[in-house]
Length: 353
Image 1: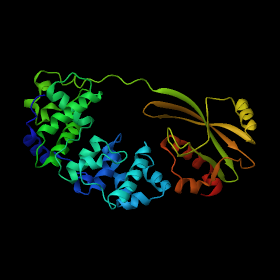
Image 2: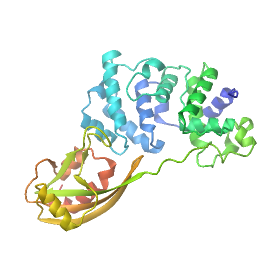
Image 3: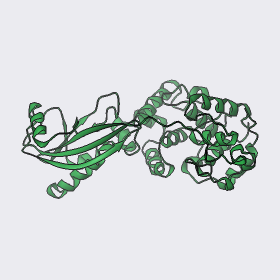
Image 4: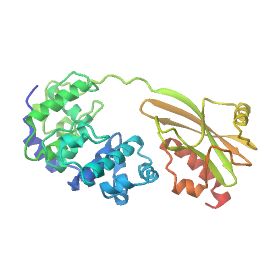
């Protein structure tokens, strides 16, 4: 592995060019942890208000451990990947049981907590505890792949392990947190993805093999992801006397344990849907077509069309909410938000909620 002796230049660049971000203003390991989990799969600008709101509601590990799961879902609503916050609460409970309500104080101990892998443990340990351990995310993988002109597939765990170990051998003992931040910042703001790096602004350009050989737009090498599976779904917006039907998803799998509008796999004609519902004991006075929507998960794409039902009686097996309760108390996954907005448009004037 090539020499990574560029820490001094990179840290100086970082001090002059770093963005002002709220989680960079603290060395509290809990706050750093919250930010790192939120930033997985989510843009920085989108995370900022969630981060502030989450910490205002749950300022300590103890608060997170003892929080009502519905409050957690509500605070996380819109960020997606809800398993992240469920794992955070599991980890917080372990902190109460094993570490006197505090975050563990070493990289190795951090990795023992649910939902904290090598990267997150490295980020917390280097930022909060000044422990010289790497935190290799997608930004860092891209920077190092170009720096070394590596033609290895960055999706392969083997390459990440190699880069992590190589960095570990040369990590600066002082300013290790700044070095970690600098690598991430370089990837986020200069060594950009999709073949469009700003090499003219890079403090490492004179050392970068991809820049020297004109291959920056070809690297990193990344195998194509498998195409997402498309699922057709029919979403039921069931109204009965000023209340609307929801149900809870199964405790495992996609959107585990979250509330949702009832739905069926596939698409239906109005007559076919009526027959199906009556067999299930749901009797609708009227059924009409509603809006369509699409939602993309990491591996599945839902194509959804809704049907709006007026029912004279509540059907068993659902939980029923007024519009105001639906808005204030229920955390609906982002996939169902367009349908909640549609209900608000249809019934707000009618019920004054």
